[in-house]
Image (cartoon, rainbow, N blue to C red):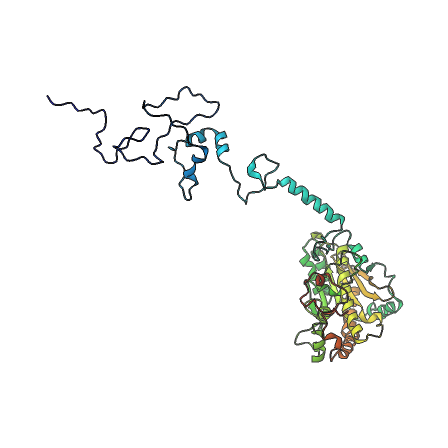
Length: 469
């Protein structure tokens, strides 16, 4: 008889056969690794039955205790580890019970996620402020800003309130700029000059076609954007294109020429007229080298050229579209600052050239126009030395549909005066300032008033020397 062979147990004929004992003492297979080591069934979570859990099949195997919580996911803690497989002994438990998942895994929100509405008890939200709390603080800050009249006292730029703010007229008055709607503040000598030189009727008569063009332009501006209002500057209503006139616009002006009362916190907003007229400063202009040297001197430049495009500006324009929310009230607020800047430009020049004389009011006046499709309002700007105030007085208001001839004559008269007598006096003053005065050598750029931009360190010159006023 042939001997019987016991086939109940493998004979180790295949390389790499594995041991099936729990203690790993079988020498027929390789030593089990941590990943392939057998572990007892995991204890079910609270609330589940334990009746169907079978004991270990090997009678000699000692029951194993589950590893500590810190060791359950040590494979996952290693850098560059692969995702957990379905065969992982603790994977099914975490998948079956959401409470276990929430207890073991803390879901971290990405930094790009918006904050949660409301307050949560989860520890994972520490350091993340609720959105409602943030909105409440923003609302409180906005209320404080409105109570102060707009702007923030934290910086010089934030101090400047918008010209459309309801309290901006108060800011103008506090800094010495007054708007005179009836023209009652115009001095007698200035009134005489306006009646004889500016408001006079001229012999030139406009054609019917030119008047009709203005009416058509005004009608087209009624429902159009603000850019359409600029069409006024190309009609007989505002004939601003002249030889010897330098045009600029829509660029911020230096604030050095703005009146400033240090008793009050809020300053006047930096001017940014839509259009401003002055004398050209290009190489093709007819200034002499001596005059150009004074105009471009670092001490004088920020006042003689407050904005790009010209020097010694004398006429500014603020154009508004009612369809886009603009109005003449806002335009007047803006023109008040622009006009004061123009007046200060020539006032400073005459103070430097004639330090012991009080210059006539007429020599330093400037003009402005606030326009919409309904009305064009003209103002004269001047400085009263006795009151230490800058005034913006209304001198005329014309309807674009019915008073084109009157508006045309007024603009032509203003430009004629500024290219004639005004420019002549400016040139005489420039001639007295060359060679340069001795006190210009070590002085900062001149300013008619103190500027918050300079105090905040935003001046482009050194702040170590004394400013010349």
